[in-house]
Length: 238
Ligand SMILES: CC(=O)[C@@H](O)[C@H](O)COP(=O)(O)O
Ligand SMILES: NCC(=O)COP(=O)(O)O
Image (tube, rainbow, N blue to C red):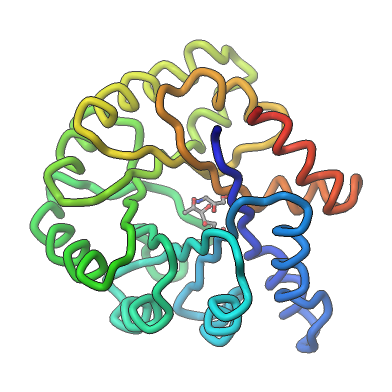
């Protein structure tokens, strides 16, 4: 079974736009769980433009499902936040300051030594580690030497090319998933997955354990409502 982790960044974006507490991020997270989501993902960014560091502390107290915190481990503030709150999983993403959204995976060849150290610190604290990578064989091969438990395949390219030819779009992902599986790495995936492209990805990616989905899912919820939307996403995965 592929698990669905709902990324609630966009709920925080909406809340922050008016300065109050509407929508209530914590209530939405709990409702996502109640509607069947198997995890909650947040990606606090240094400017706290959506998820605030305080949100992470509250979420850690109340969530019953898998808590996944994504972010840039080069920010010491982020590392300290994760170590203090001990989520089930941390996903390391090589964001640049001021990026609109995540737009590339780690260069695991160039940053191999850095990643080994960063990953060891989280693992010593008992936190499962995943690292965000492009579907490029040498990046996944080098990821396997860093000590990470999992990789998260960055799926924007798959999503962008899906409608032009889904077999071609998924091919590099299958190739890299096979490498990850042989190396004993768990596989997560995320970015721009949606109700159109998810089922094919879930059915054809060998060893896929978890997807984290935010932008499209929250957008769909405007039309279908949150409960129906989450159930529709879960249906794509089963
Ligand atoms: C790591 C990743 O794939 C991103 O999708 C991210 O979690 C979304 O971040 P934003 O919500 O800030 O665009
Ligand atoms: N890790 C990917 C994620 O959490 C959500 O990405 P998106 O669905 O907002 O593109």
